[in-house]
Length: 214
DNA sequence: CGCCAGGGCCTCA
DNA sequence: TGAGGCCATGGC
Image (cartoon, rainbow, N blue to C red; front, top):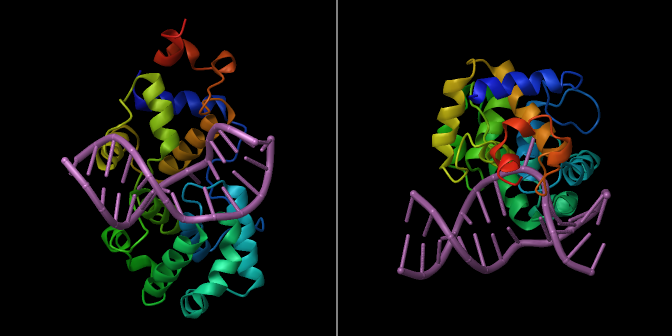
């Protein structure tokens, strides 16, 4: 069983859900800017809290790179408070939008994003994949948790090592990357939680974590 | 109530 | 280069 096999199993098992996804606030297709800002706001934070923050930003007319980057930091803080870590995130969002307003979305490089304060590997790749539709696989805490329990990885590998491993083992296109990531999120939320519900897990017979706990 | 959430930065070895 | 501390709100 390698990574690609698990991708196929997850795809079969969660065939009923929508996979080509980035969470949205208003049920519309999110704009590139909303995806980029949401990627920062969701750092170590539940998406429900991010939704409130994004709704507040819309109400405050903080909806363009120009308006956000020119807004007072206190106004951004007020809007995004529900997303947590709001003081840091207000700065991060402001820096990011100041960068974005000068750029055409199509000409943004991963390294440029990583150079911005507050944009790390996962946030950069989320923006690259979901906002720009570029082929970068997103490694997150869920990916590490699920695949370390399965026994495919150790879990403490550095980010780039894991990204390359996953990209090497699945088809190189953005639809596959997005779908796989969505499936990982789904499985982590439904079953492979921090406190895992192995009893109901369809992968348990292939999982080191479950086998070694018997 | 306590735990947890789709990180990232800084500091210090 | 990596472990530990810190940032903060809201749902369950």
